[in-house]
Image 1 (spheres, rainbow, N blue to C red):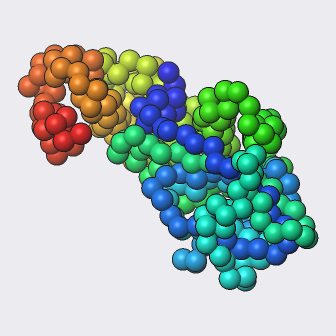
Image 2 (image 1 turned 90 degrees about the vertical axis):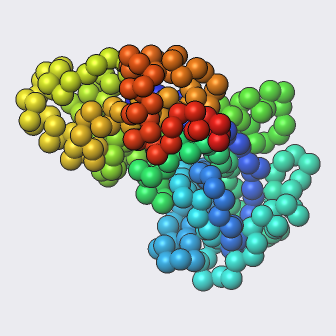
Length: 302
C-alpha cells in the first residue's frame, strides 16, 4: 500500500455518519470537544464555524467540507455574535424519525451532513499531530471535485433510512477523510512530517519504498539512489520535510506496525521477523528504545 493507505489501515478508524441537520433562521450552537475527528459537508446554505478560544470565524458555504482534527470545542451558526445554545441537546430534542434533526421553523435554510472518526488506539497521533486544527476545503477549490461527488452521496444516504445504511455510511465517511486529506495535500499548504512529504515527488517515492517493504534492510544510500538523489541531498531533504532522518522514520514506523501486531496477540518472534529483525533481542531493544516499554509489558497493558 502507499504510505497514506498504510497509515490509515493501521489506525483502524471507526467512522460514524451523524444525523443530517436542517436549520432555519438565526441560530448558533456550541459543541463540546470529544477525542475524535469531526467532519461535515454543506448540502445547502452557508454558516460560520468558530471556537471560543480565539479561532477566527470561517465562512462555510454550500459544497464546502471541513475537518476538525483536535477534538476541540467549536461553534457553528448563522452569526458568530449570537450566544450559542448546547448543540447536542438542541439536535437531540429535534431529531425526527427519518434521522434528520430540524431546528427552527422560518428563515434561510441551512442543511449539512457529517460524522466523526474514532481511532482504535494511540497510533492515531501519527495522523492527527500533522494536521492543522481545522482543514477547510472550499467547493470552488481545484481539489474539491471528488468531494462534490461524495457530497451528493451523503445527501442521498441521509434523506431516508435504507437497507445496508450502516455499511454505506462507514465507507462514505472513510472516503470523505481520504479526499479531504488529498485536497489538503494538493492545496499547496505544506503539512509537517510524512503527510506533507507525500506531496514531494522524490521524498514521497522514498516513503513509498519503505512502506512497501518494511522488513528490508534499507540504507540511506540505497534509498537515495532509488529516487535519483545524492546521499547527502536526500538525507537533508528528507529530514527537512519529514522532521527525522530516513532510517529513524523507518524504525518508528516499524515499531508502530509492531505495536499493532502485539496488540493482536502475535508472538514476539513473529512480530520481530515481520518488521525486519533477525532476533527477538534486537527487536525488543529497538522497541523499548522507541516506545519506552518492553514488548511484553506493552502487549499486556493494551
